[in-house]
Image (tube, rainbow, N blue to C red; front, side, top):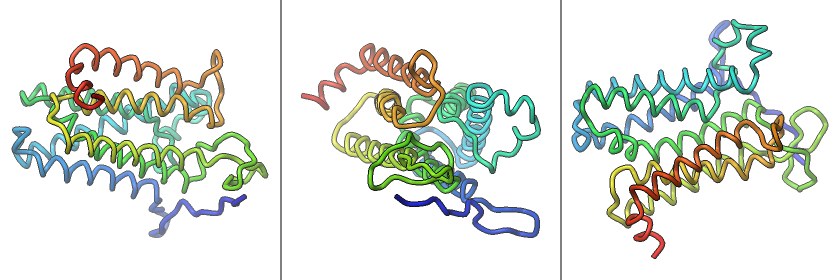
Length: 254
């Protein structure tokens, strides 16, 4: 067993704290910007439009992730302490809300600029997975989203005296692995635009659903909020892949 003793604060400037969570979150967006700039001509975007798109993505991610966390994960706490909603540096950003916020923001921007949303989604899929993996490492540094009690040798005591699964580290490995798998698929096959995005939606939903059985959560009809939302992701992924990408699936699994 390992006892959690990490400091979520990277350094302080007077009364201002610079936290690992915020730095890692920013790194994720910078990675997305790198991929967008590298492919902007293929996407039909100027350099300025690429920066504008990143701004839309940041707003969509932060607003969506925070709203989902407030409304679905800790509504009683935040309704009693509304100012805490603004304390983003303390964590509390829901994956499903961030994903939905990014999709909506990207779709709006692409519609306005008359560029392909699915092309943009495919370009962002791999950096998004890497960024999400980094986000889970940030969660671990914050000592949040703990796993269920276990007796495995690598369990972690997060301060409650109980030995728990390091759930967020499992999640990080899952996301990095999925990024590698999709990168390999992208390099090996010529695929219809949007395939990587919807395949990621399906695999992330499946992975999150099963992995959350190791997470300490309130259950509703036997499943957590995250699992119910992940089932929606799985359904969307299956429907879209079966509807528009059967030929691509045959290429990969033949």
